[in-house]
Length: 128
Image 1: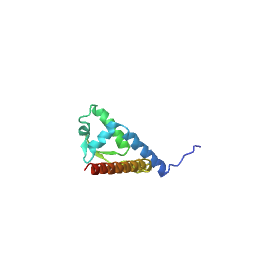
Image 2 (image 1 turned 180 degrees about the vertical axis):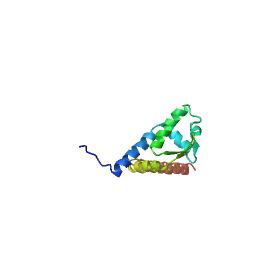
Image 3 (image 1 turned 120 degrees about the vertical axis):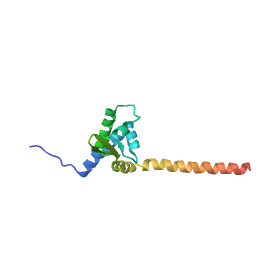
Image 4 (image 1 turned 45 degrees about the horizontal axis):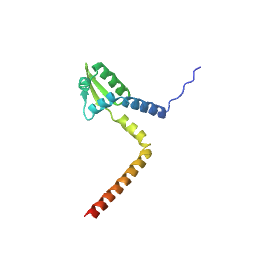
């Protein structure tokens, strides 16, 4: 008898998040997403100006499709690609949970810049 574990929605969400981060880890795939930002492109248009083969670009697209970041619509031999931003939003939400760790640094930077601005203003007044 085999024991089957039920997958919760959380397991599915974690798997989807892992696929998104794995897809975003490659600079070529990030560039592909940038090219698709705001427009649909044919695979050949996506591949234009890359120094890799069309087949290599197609493999990158497959990873992006599997992660849900790109959808492809085929008409005969022609394949049109579209950016799907939903999974990026999910990754941003996950990352935002950790913003407290860098927000303190931004607050410190803002306070330091205010101090520098005040010192510069005082020096300017003294010089006049």
